Length: 301
Image 1 (spheres, rainbow, N blue to C red):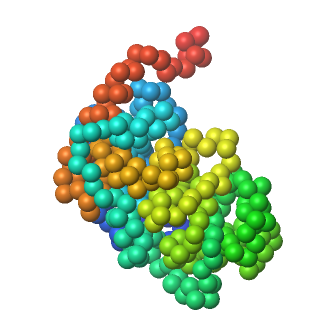
Image 2 (tube, rainbow, N blue to C red):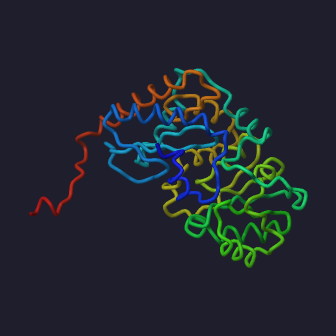
Image 3 (cartoon, helix red, strand yellow):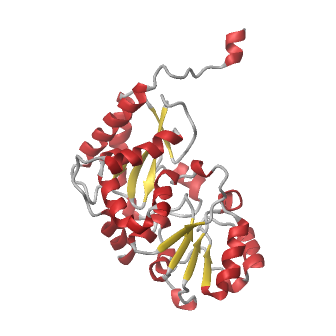
């Protein structure tokens, strides 16, 4: 089990500690891993790749305090969200209110001990939510960030991810001004709650929380390779259909086909896991003989 493995977490998030609000996902991970093993499918925590439609690996991670399944195939990840939206055979749960309450009750943060001393940094109308140091230069568009800064001036905050080096923060201050960069450990959700508009990425949960709070959201990603973003299959629909975002969130995430499992809203979450795995296995098997994954060099020997 990798989601809560101390060694894995140290490698991924360093000194940071996961929030206790994620603890209910431990049982989900344990159950999921046992079921996926029975299907003969491998599992991978918080990793994305592009495998054949008859994929070998089921990815999983957390998203907005929920558990999320994603096959390591771009088309399958997007298709499961479309199938979930089209699904008529499920009860509609109020996911949007759940996400909104997470923010209002200070339960949304993935990490413990976020700085609550926000009086030093008054809320501004616009908020730019940046990814960590390992992704900010590859995944975000510097030209877009400069455009935002030029357009909004001192009405915008740039919020570095908690996993951001001092070197990168220094570079951000050089480009956008020291007075426009929030501390990396300050509570981002305080600013998300009171800002009018959120600029974020396809790899951030803030898109979901922004729509649930009724905020306008806009992407800051580099377009090339955007489909390989951690939450592209979800956030792409949030950006595109945000005018009907609440309906989309509730209807789509309520379907087991979405790959979302939320123990706080779903007492029968084990049944939800089973239903999802049955659905995705049927889709997977359809493509079993369509493409052959092999090493041509071995064939030539």
